[in-house]
Every structure is written in structure tokens, then in C-alpha cells.
Amino acid sequence: MFDAAFYAAVFPELVQQECRRQPGKVPVVQFRVGDGATLDVCHFLQLSEKWLAVAFFRDPETCEDMDIAFLPYELVVRIIVSLHSPESRRLGFRVGEPTPAARGEGEVGKVEGPAT
Image 1: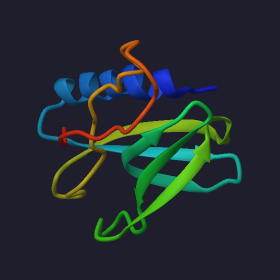
Image 2: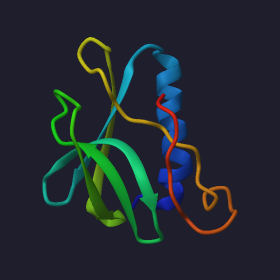
Image 3: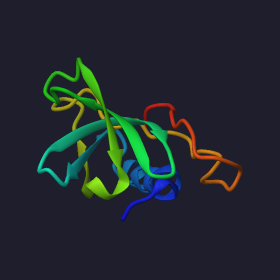
Image 4: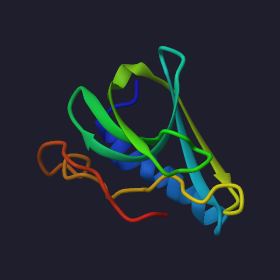
């Protein structure tokens, strides 16, 4: 199961590594959840001990509107990271800074950061 430390530290670093390998591409992150839905994640809003909140694109084609999902960690069964050309995808996943908890500095909290 993915946990707060994974989303705060490991996952952003892996996405950044992929972006460095293919500069100029737009990172797209999809969460496949246990009920069969796929969320096109823009960024993490908050990580807690037992759940995470994500902003996701309602319509990945336009990237105009977003919704928020609160998910228990165990509901995320697969994470897909892909890189797209800016012509086919204008917005993608924003990689945030590691939270204090991921650095061993207190409670898990808000995760936001600049676009990659």
C-alpha cells in the first residue's frame, strides 16, 4: 500500500526523474482506484496518516475544471505516470515539495508546489 511518506517524498522524486529524462513533456498522473474509477491527478492537496486529498481534472481534454477527492490510501490500487507532448496536453501533474513529515519534521500536512 502507498502511504503518506511515499506520496510526499518517493513519488515526487520519481516523477521529477522522468521529467528530467524527457524535458519539455507534460507529466500526467492517473490514479486507478478500487471502485474502477481513474482520476487524472493535478496535485496533492493534503496527506494525513490514513488518507490523502487530491485535486483532479474533471475533463482531462480541457483541463479547465477540477474536483477534489479524499481517498484512503488503500483505495489507490495503481498509479500511472506518463509524459505527453504539450500539443496533446496543456496541463499535467504538479510536483510539490516534500512535507515536513516526509523529512521527519512533524505531522503530515499540506503538499503544494510549482509545476514541473
